[in-house]
Image 1: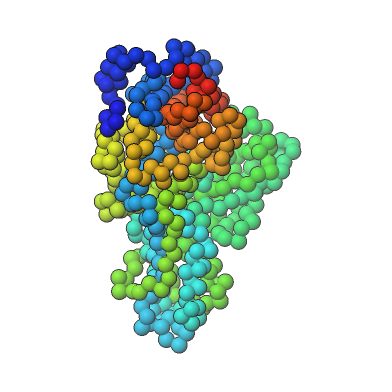
Image 2: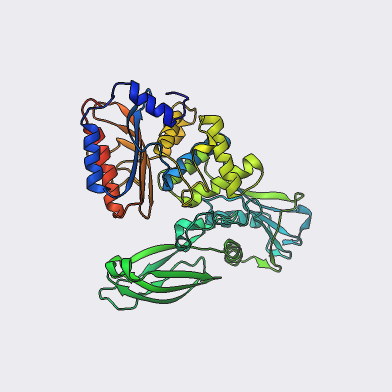
Length: 474
């Protein structure tokens, strides 16, 4: 099966003319699991040999499913091929040296953002500390913030409106500071119908809260009301209800206006440094004649894809998506980023562009579709790729910190190396499993259109892996 893309014809012929590679009871056992956990859902499964690629089991493997965060497998593989494992994001502070006169900068200062998803406020502080190294105590010019490498479309097509306020849908901008999010603390509430108190304890960013939220039971919150969050500049309005069972708790929300975040960060840093600023903050391109005085470099890509695959960080994924568009087509957009991913899949892994549908690299978009066989084929192709080690080490591992930390912690601990996926009515798990005999297999399991809870769908995936691990003659 090496270097061969699944097709309905090939899949049918391989099953028709090859002897079954699994115990006769395996399909019945899998059917029992589906009846138990996902009876009324759409379930697609592909299981194949790690070594040969031969199909061991399949169910609706060629059907199109919404893969949720399994989309990040395509993004990560493409990023390694296009950018290289040693790629680093850079954030630069620059100026024109001749404008420095007697501890004063008499011309503009340039701050250039390039979409580094790992950039923190402390990293910006370190950049601005270089002003002191040059003995600059006063800025008598404008600060030019360059956020032009990515487009102004901060959200992908197919992102749901109700996800926008939350941290996992933070705006994908050239400007990223502290992952473009902040946190609210919810005080403990023990009785229903009591007001829920939210507080913001961080000194940065500065926000105000206007809240009218009532405590309810979890079932009420699920069926009768919801919390609504909106942001207008630095003010957050929170209305509706919140389950008292989920208090006390810290919740993370997105900061939807990156330019305002940058303005506040600059003001916060200059005040802390006691640098006098007599000018405005303006957004446009950096003057190519300016000279860098400080550059912050992110970790290498081989490190940055770990939050993508291990923790399923959406912002990391989609800043990389736009960066791929910039690297491949000179446009930092979702569309060109997706085109770059699909080009890489075709050129490097023989996966045709018409075999799936992408609208982002994170999997937030509900428009994205892919089949279990397509995902499994990518995993099979990756194992022979020069970047496999970086890819494999970035995946989540059962029983280890990451999205599989609390799952499969018994006999399956360290045996499943995979990417998770979750959304309303959807769950996915695709990766590699080492069974009791020591053999390795590649699998992709996706469940769509389910009415069951996340917990039940995850239990289905875990039971499936337990079944494989203990299966005889597998």
